[in-house]
Length: 353
Image 1 (cartoon, helix red, strand yellow):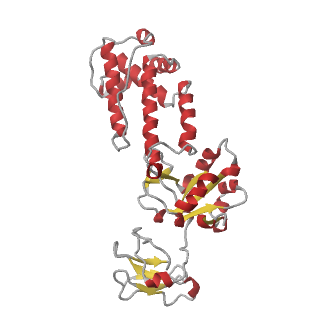
Image 2 (image 1 turned 90 degrees about the horizontal axis):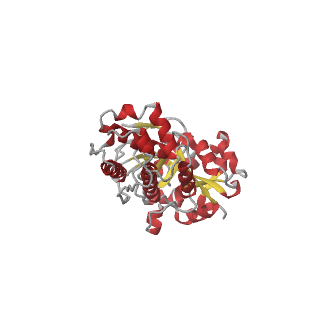
Image 3 (image 1 turned 120 degrees about the vertical axis):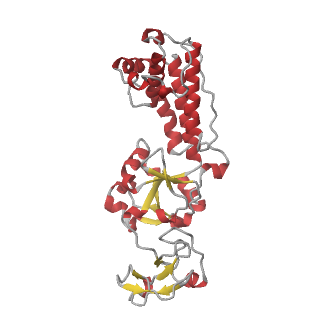
């Protein structure tokens, strides 16, 4: 017979005749007020412990159909580890809406794929674009795209001195994102096609549509002279390569915005503090609140491929599984012992009641 260790009494219990959605009480647990039921999930067929009030299998996250026995039993919180939780930072106004309806992707709530005006993406977008227009830092996407276009034209035979004078030459990336998974690759293809059309317009001939397959391209873009010239051109708003690069960056952020509007985002446990500090920089801490949700209770949770510190889901996260940090000073969230203390968290539905 299968066995499992009870999390309350730490004794191994044999489970007889467990099948389907049947339950079996722990016979050795002395803490009747915290009694758990042994449960064999009909989806994953694994035996585990389930709190009487829970609605999800702790092994495979399958939603459990409640029965009379569950509904009559007292609700008991499952023991948890700090790493079981992920976080969502927002402001008081939005949190009041979440208390009533839960976390809902903007697209599902409004039908629009525009990021929430009070969200982190919308607040930082214009600032990021402006900083890239004036950047001299080689890590920014604008510079990277200018360097890419510059190396491409050099590989086709254009001298640096000539490229520097290419001001007011028309160039356009013909692409409209639709919010699908193919937006990223399609943007890359369209930007390559626009640069190829520019090269033909300037009289340097055709080349492979995929820019990084042009002979000597990889070596050319690493040359010190090319890097220095790319930095110079990136600070020339009227240059055709800068215009092309800015079109790409703007469309790239539009794709990110559409993706943001179609998902609910959470910070992974390991990155809770740096993400909190980043979100709250320059914002009054008095209006900031932090929410948390147990990972196993979120349907469709996946890693955010564009941000390694985050996870997201396209599904609604109901208020019944959301907790809110209620320490008097919200900055206590950055202190591990305060962040992990159950005493500093309450169900969001009880917040402000």
